Image (tube, rainbow, N blue to C red; front, side, top):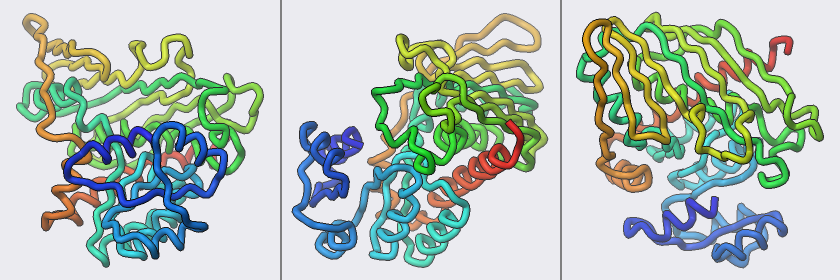
Length: 316
């Protein structure tokens, strides 16, 4: 979360008023990266002693829902990395409190602002592809065992690889199709790469049906070679198939290709976002559209948790 801390610090719309971290080891590591902490003994004390309008949350995934609920009860807007929480009942409480208090909740769904994916979305919105029939996406991440925070691999702290990674993809699929997840056809998580932690499900795949009728197949495993990090062709690679052809687009490439049902291949242009996520969040807080904004964040989270639950209840 030091990245978010620095982004907020450099954004003229925000001013850092303090920070809190209960874990001493994590706190020291963050201090070495320039984070300045408040001299307080608990998160409750932190909430009572800050005049901040917004709380940025970066707790381990299983604790995140509880922390967000506490901050919302204290009247704070929320900005958080994904996932927002790991349990449906936590999301229900977050949704209820945020809507009652008219507090904005931002999840850092960064693919929403990726210029290549915005270029593909622009083509879809223009009608070029026609009605979407199916989408295949890959969100292969490197495991980076030994480099990631150790809590990732501690039982009960992660909450599932689908919930961790796939929310980015589900959010985009919902935007592309103007539809929601209707049914989980199948979902599976299993351990393969993290041999030292056999309870950690580093591999994940699923198949879903959207209410529009479109089918979606996805792989969001931690199976990318560590050596190549995020610079490989399976890192957020989307193939979108419609009545009039197919669009192939990747987060890390400016090359967006439309393969029409007839005629020559068309190269599409990336579209630069009008504003970044943090600036958009600041504007939402000042607007009258908080509930509409929150709904998008909450619905993408809820539908990803639905897929995660299916996987948790299935045989691996």
